[in-house]
Amino acid sequence: MSSTTELYPRGILGPDTTPTTDRELQAWHALSDVIDPEIRKPITTLGMVSAVEFSGDNVTVSIRLTIDGCPMQDTIHADVAAAVQPLVDGKVSVRLTTMSPEQRVALQQHLTASRPRNPFGEGTLTQIYAVASGKGGVGKSTITANLAVGLAERGLAVGLIDADIHGFSIPGLLGVTAKPTKVEDLIMPPVAYGVKVMSIGMFLESDQPVAWRGPMLHRALEQFVTDVYWGDLDVLLIDLPPGTGDIAISTSQLLPNAQLLVITTPEHTAAQVAARAGQLSTQTNQPVTGVIENMGPMLLPDGTVVEVFGSGGGEAVSTRLSQVLDQEVPLLGSIPLDPVLRADSEAGTPSVVTSADAPAGQALNMIVDQLAGTPRGLSGRKLPVTPK
Image (cartoon, rainbow, N blue to C red; front, side, top):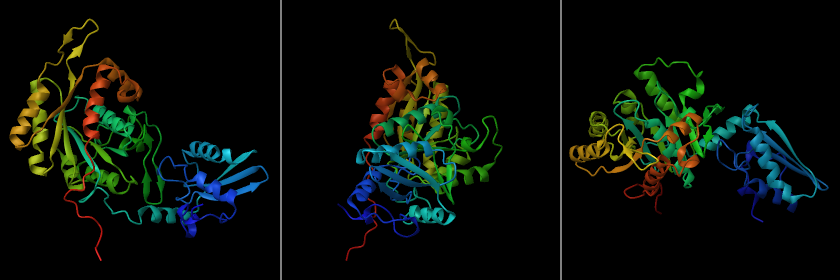
């Protein structure tokens, strides 16, 4: 049996009673497999387990929730009971309490002990994609939501920031209704389809407009980056507002390692606007990973192909950006106009999961496969070690 120091932090976050018997240690090890649904770490190392008490064939597990009325308390209750039930022949009781203010402060310090103020600044190993478009209405947010879920489905730790402050739509596209949980100065993002999500829409009524100007927009994005506990992400996606305004510039400052994904439609007028969004990279020094064409030619059941919005726009943007930026900017894929994608988006169920066999779902998953194959590179990075 491994040491209890591997199971929980010392000090104010530790258990009320130290496990000593084999049964207690077995229970603690079983509970170390229970992951907090918001923080995404074992509840034992977060100081959420205060006691495990056996009485004959029964066991009582005492859990400290981070806040009173924790929105995920039912999930935690069920996961804890399921983890320890195989260890007893009798009843499992789960007693829920709430952390004291001192314990919440200790939890915040525990989570941020080795965390920089901006975890996605220079030197980050997280792959960051800022999804841009020249104008609205091209399906940028729909694509961003599906890419995030598709990457999470492939086992990656994924975060998604809805930076389209004035036109936020990510919560609806992913069916997120939960509010973020605040632990002292840290914000815990809701999780949908395995993706940690943050949007200004989670703090507003559904029809409430956001009438903010540049400095407020920058501050909102800064808070999403620095005040939210994202944990260790493999990929972070940013759903940018259309155009080349304040948020796009703020993103380049706060997330200097971000790469651009440019979304366009097949019509050449839209492609010209999209190309301008991609050319912003010449001012922000952000590489363009590729172009994604949405609302491409539609395949009818009888095999007829209908070019509702024309064709060739994605290839035109790819060619234009490759020339202007003097780098290869590939067309990652063309997503056909598909009523299934629209219906899934309105239902808050991403097509990459719920309609993977539909034409749009297949095209999206092919793009996800290309992005998922990009490793978290260490090449050229300075490692935080000092040789002796």
